[in-house]
Picture 1 (cartoon, rainbow, N blue to C red):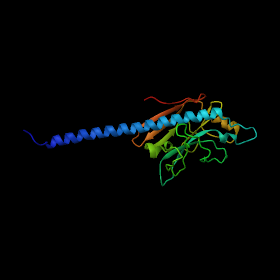
Picture 2: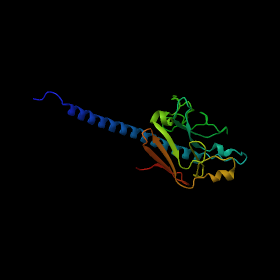
Picture 3: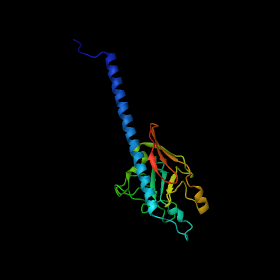
Picture 4: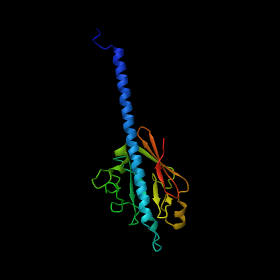
Length: 208
């Protein structure tokens, strides 16, 4: 009766275990990427809803457009690395989001906000930390009109904008006229795509 494995049998077992481990790791990473996309869809819907009920227009304020509800992607500082996003209304008109100006997560009541230090802090949603939480290495926004990674702003009329301009006539130039794609790209180069429709602001995760 055979009591030991041959070298070929051991190599075969190791090969099978490696395949199983790789499959489990791929599924785990795919699930994390799906979670990131689902959370971003939820947050974009909440941003649009907030915009519909919160009209920021003021005829006596030349910078009123800065207060529109916006989701913007940022890079963490070089010491940390990675990508995050914040959702805010720039009520102070400084051009930089602050904790007080950020939108609340409807599920946790935490601020959808971070700084470029990209730290997990109890009163801030950890889900905005795309790299730290979801292993995402890049974001591509097809309708990006800025020099940054991209931003999406909503008007109370349901329209969607890719940039906040200094003048009313220029601001209208940045209204999204075609479907906008937001791609989340993992370290393994797996991509999840979110589609944002013009006019209606309808947002959904693209089926594979």
